[in-house]
Length: 120
Image 1 (cartoon, rainbow, N blue to C red):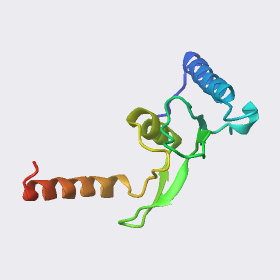
Image 2 (image 1 turned 45 degrees about the horizontal axis):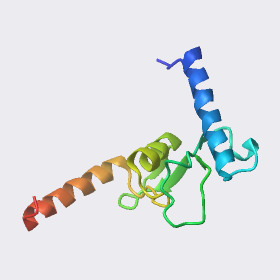
Image 3 (image 1 turned 90 degrees about the vertical axis):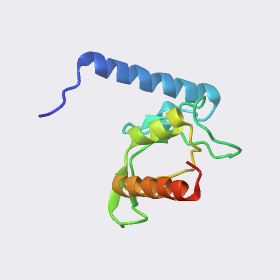
């Protein structure tokens, strides 16, 4: 079953993208809208946590990585980066290092260690 995108959803998606590009232009992070690739999600300069860095990312693109624990090839999607950096508020220089399965195992390991140490 394929997921069809309604016309309204596409219009909202375009409006979302254009508003973010406008914010990047206004903030001076880019000089032209052509700097943001078509297959990416533009960054909102007001929401991303760049800390004290001079580097300013302009968009989120899918990134491939190898899981630190099991070594599998994984893909960190732009949508996931958008959520991680802007919704959660993580520093932009943080990157994915574990696949979902290994991340769940690591969380369980840490929770068990906290219980053993008496911090729970």
